[in-house]
Length: 173
Image 1 (cartoon, one colour):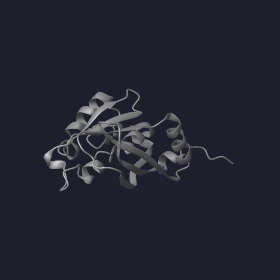
Image 2: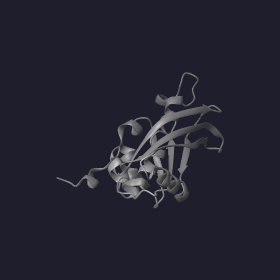
Image 3: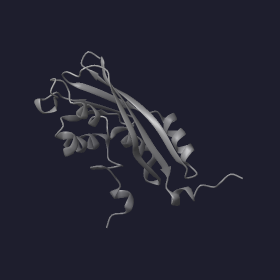
């Protein structure tokens, strides 16, 4: 049997996997693959992911532009993945809320780049250190080939240090 740390996953992949392996496995993951969504790059430090959605007949709506659900799906797991990757198994991380604003019709291939900083991660770690629930909003723009913003997506990520891990942190008096 594998130790618990070896089987912790981000959907279809291990948290500890190399960025190239994560890219390959997520690109083969049916919920994204069948929608035409692909990771085009992941930084070596796992602080940045770029995703592309190709336009196909099956992901256009009745007006002939990108189906809004496809635009939303292309942004779904990535903030959570970035935070999980850096906070590790001692934290519970999940998406709590989301909203999308459609700004112009999406035509052709569209992309989104998710970038998080070490400073943002440290704020999350510190706020959750005592086991408190932390709710943080992240925002990403979906852009077309001309760089025009097609949609703006906000995701609220829930972070909490697991109770057994929080108990290991000394409390200040």
